[in-house]
Image 1 (cartoon, rainbow over the protein chains, first blue to last red):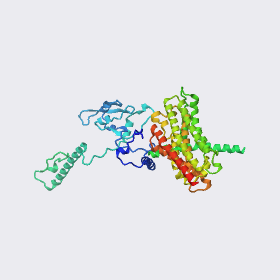
Image 2: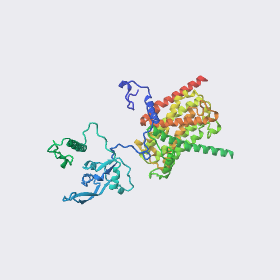
Image 3: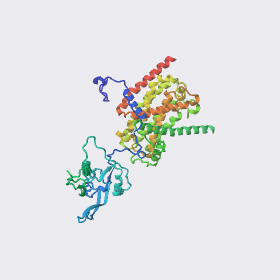
Image 4: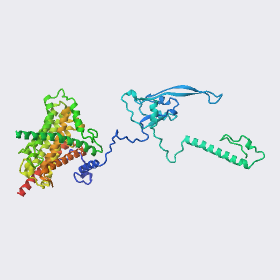
Amino acid sequence: MPTASPDHRPSSTTSGRPRSFPGSGLAKGLAVTLRTMTKKTVTAQYPDKQPELPPRTRGVIGLFEENCTVCMLCARECPDWCIYIDSHKETMPAATPGGRERSRNVLDRFAIDFALCMYCGICIEVCPFDALFWSPEFEYAETDIHELTHERDKLREWMWTVPEPPALDPGAEEPKEIAAARKAMEKQAAAQAAAEAAAAQAPQAPGPENSGPQNPGPQVPGTPEGGPA
Amino acid sequence: MNDALDVALRLLVVFAVFLVLPLVVGQTEHKVMAHMQGRLGPMYAGGFHGWAQLVADGVKFAQKEDVVPANADRRVFQLAPAVALLPYLLVLVAIPIGPSEGAVGQVVDAGIFFVLAVMGVGVLGSLMAGWASANKFSLLGGLRTAAQLLAYELPMLLAAASVAMAAGTVSLPGILNAFEWWWLPWQIVGALVFFVAGLAELQRPPFDMPVADSEIIFGAYTEYTGLRFALFLLAEYAGIVVLCGLTTVLFLGGWHGPFGADGLGWVWTLLKTAVLAFLVIWLRVSYPRLREDQLQKLAWTTLVPLALAQIALTGIVKVAIQ
């Protein structure tokens, strides 16, 4: 009897496992394929049916040009130099009479060459003014490589496809901007309430030294006023 | 004159079946394999669920350049696809699908001999292709084909011989006329051996060692392009039709069915053939390829003894009922 079998199946006598009915493994294999055949397929017919992409998909980069200050950080950080920015300086007349003239940067051109872009997202990370965003839009193939350089109007259009940011975790710390805005609003509301209370008290208690109604009283909300007390 | 017309008509019908059924099997394989893997398969060609995919493939193959390697044995290389394909056409002529005289291309008295001998010729096409290509992978594929033919022709013949013994005739319609329903359990081992050996002879997975693409590119067909390559593929699917038809006729009772009028026997034959063809596809999807030595071991240590045991059983029962 040949001891060395050419196939390397573990012998059931040495492994001690109970030997299953011969051929049951083959039957299992057939059962798996037959069961899969009766199930619904997982294929998505792409051009007919759009894929449901997760909101953080890195499809294309959208530009929110209202936020852009032409700081050039994105263009300088881009590892393959695929962002082109042109700008000029404009001088704004003084806001108040006698004030100083202000100068600001105006964006002339903002283009991203998606033939070079490697979708690293560094420009989006580095933008301090939240002018660049990932969009899940991905159908912008072109027949010519030069047409893959997309200008600001196209980048601005893609901005509309950017999904809203996911909600914060429950119990997460409040975002700084919102906290600042809320504090300012609370302060304003408190000041207004105080002013109203003062206005209500004034006619009831006409003190001898109080010439409140004649005074130009509390006009500016938020300024701590002396009041009758 | 009338005879000539009759012959021409029969040949035409057989030729049409020969062209249509393999394509139907091929398309079924596309779709069944896809769904067994959770895919959809071809969906666009022809509009409705990609029914014209193989027609499109054929058009593509016809457009491709027909390359013959510089060092190839030109004549043999070009002849090989025809040698691989034509035997199956000849076998199809002899397979009866109904009980009447009109339901078979040509009644051959020594039907089993004719059919098995001619089927064996088909493998010669792969051998010729393997030798003539002047390519080491083609040669390896050809040699594997030869080894496989040697190993599996024997159990196939023995299993068929068992049926011939049971019926007392080697004519295919004769075997079917003698068929009784209890032959099914009686010859079941022979049927399994015949079917498995037939799969191996067609080089279908899991017995596709001769074309194992992960080891020897595409075996004997490595150097083929265009229409000649398509003919080899067509030969494989024609082989499936022929093998399933033969298994139906020899072991599953052909036109006999549990019910059905005399005129509808051919429906039973086609139905059984279709079920077997589905089985061929199913096995291909489910099982990985055997290793070359496992392939030989299966033939010599399992199938040949089983076929011999079947012959012994057939002989004993045959003597007992007389």
